[in-house]
Amino acid sequence: MENFQQPASQIKRVLLPGIILQSVLIGGGYATGREIVEYGGKFGASGWISGLAIFFGFSLISILSMEACRQWQVYDYKSLLKKMVGKGWIAYEITYLLLAILIIAVMAAAAGEILNNTLGFNQWVGVMLIVVLVGFLNYKGDKVITKLETIGTIALFSAYIIFSIAVFSTRGSAIADVFTNWDSSYLPDAPHFGLLVWTGILYVGYNLAVYPASFFTYRNIRSRKESIAAGFISGALMTIPWFLTYFALLSYYPSQEVLASTVPWLKMLEPFHTVMIVIFGVVVGWTLVETATGMIHAFIHRIENEVAERSAEPMKKIHKAYISTAALVASLVLAQVGIIDLVAKGYEMMAYAMIAVYGLPLLFNSKRLLFK
Image (tube, rainbow, N blue to C red; front, side, top):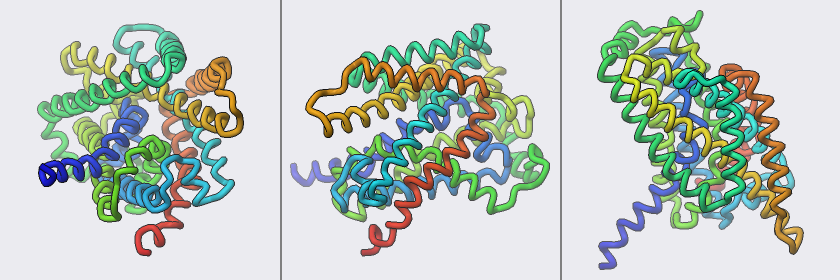
C-alpha cells in the first residue's frame, strides 16, 4: 500500500503549484483576449517566439520561487522578500496595490464592454456591477470567495478550450496561411527577435503578482529536482491559455476589427450561435469579478496579518470596508481610460515595477538557489 500511495503524493507535489498558479493567472491574464494581442498576437506568425519566452519565463520564476521557499523555509511573500531585499519588501506591497487597482480597472472596463455588446446595456452598468459584486464578495469573506473562484476558474478554462476548438474547426486554414506567408502585416514593421523575447518577458513581469498565492503549495516540495519538475509544469499550465488564444487570433489575422477590438474574443465568437456569446459573457464576466475580488481580498489579508503582528486586536470590518472602497473607487476612475490603453501602457509600466521588486531579486539569488 505504501508503494501505491507514494507516486500519487509525488504527482500532487509537482502538479498542485501549477494548478493554483494557473487558476490565479487566468482571469487577469487571459479573459478578454486583449492581453494576448498586445503580448504576442499582433506579431502574427512571429508571435509564437513571445509565447516560448513566456513559457520559459514562467518556468524559471516558478523554479526559483519554489526553491527559495523550500531552502529558506518561508511560505509567505513578506518573509521571502525580507530574505532577498530586507526592508525593501514594502516596495512590493506598494507595487502590488497599484497593480491590483489597474487589473480591477481593466476588469471593470471589460465587463462594461461585454454587457454592452451582448445585452445592449450601457457600459456603466457593467462597470458598476463589477464594483458592487466585488465589494459584496469581500464583505462575505474567505469561504465564499474560495468556492466561487474555484468554480469560475474551472468554467473559464473549459470555456477557453470550447471557444478555441470552435474557432480552429471553422478557420484552421487561415491559421496555416498566416504561417505559410509568415504574415506580420498588422504592424508597420516586421518584429525582430529581441522585441519578441522582451515582449514575453514583460508579460511574465506584470503577472508576477500571482506567485504569492501559490506559496502554500510549496511546503510539500522535498527536493530541487521536484522544484524543477513543478516549475516546468507550472510554466506549461500558465502558458497553454496564451497559445490557445494566440492561435485563435491568428485565424483572423490581420483583421483590424478583431485585433483592435477591446474584447477580441467577442469579435471572434460573433459568427457562432448566440448561445456561445452568452456562455462567453457569463463565464468571462464572472471570472472578471473573481479576479478583481481576489486582488483586493489578498491585499486586505496582507494588511490584516500585519495588524495582527503589531496589535493584539484584529482588524476591524469597517477598516476593511474603507480599503475595499478606496481601491474600487480608484479602479472606477481608472477604468475610464479604456481597456486598450490600460493593457498596452498600464500593464507595461507595472511589468517593469514587478520585475524590479520580485523578478530581479530572485534572479540575483539564482546561483545560490540552484547551484549551491
